[in-house]
Length: 109
Image (cartoon, rainbow, N blue to C red; front, side, top):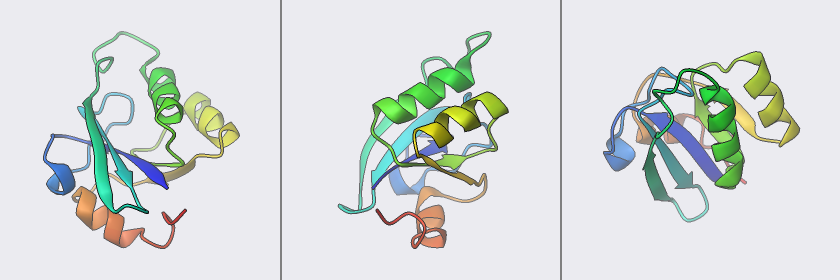
């Protein structure tokens, strides 16, 4: 399963979770089956005036992620992700490695 995790820096599994969803600094995509980081993308729309949550949701879906780990989402993005059958995990503390360990059972595809 591909998982998108909102992070503060480009440090692989040591990246710290970002407390923002649509305005996170980076989006890390991790494959739980291959047990590896597939990509770390800078959030190019984090500084836009509006619509960043919707754009983030579209990016999650475009990347083929079946789960997302980050801050609580607003009602519009929550509905979009639910309709796309994307599991949402509200978590903002720790590193990517720590969160993957903590939610290992829930993130298996």
